[in-house]
Length: 151
Length: 192
Image (cartoon, rainbow over all chains, first blue to last red; front, side, top):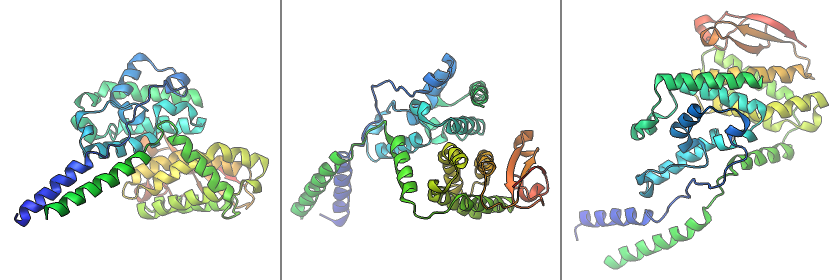
């Protein structure tokens, strides 16, 4: 075997082996008692937007795309979800202190307004998660209302 | 040669298979976990600094932002995280302790964001704007140092919504607008 073939063989082996390292899936069958819908009135429309555009990384349940099965794609996804949930988890929103809820609401509004969220790398693949201007306005207005209700 | 490759593959496989089992984590407790470590850290009482350190880290951060210096601001943010973690709650008065408990997790999170966002001064300022009223409340709850401080408002920040900050000088040095509008702002209240 030439060294090129050997190299390829090795790479292939590595690729095959890493397929066996599947990260834990972000799936929870339990309905959370701390869910945002339990602490704030969330209109159906807003709930739909949040579920469709935010919940994949900011809740305890992710709708996994097919490539999550393929490594290292799945690892990348898992690390994004971990970070996302750490920042903000809609299923745990009720467990945040009142002040933290206020800050989170404000940050949600800011990041949607300046379009840093949802991440462009996410909407590139999940086209339907992209927010229209109307949807952005809906969410930012709702977030402001909720924030004032906490003051 | 084939044998070596094969044995390598098998050993990698075994290694990863063993590793995998221990990686399972509980989904729902992520947030709670980190909260626990925070408490543990505070209780360890690395230093017995009171709120003085918190305020001086905040002022360092404020001055860096006024100079449009994102890197120094990040450093100030990191110092603030440390200072909040180092506060010895036993040394606080009842009133201070109440306010501190109320603001500490949120203020710490803002400081963390500022610390990790060198290169994005707008984002640092967004968090600074949420952080400032919390530090204000902490000062209002009684600051042992008795340092003279001023609560300053700039009505122009954030498209006319305005923003507040605490300053150690009467002289206005705007941390939200920096050089672009360094002197915008007026003292709303004198503290201590």
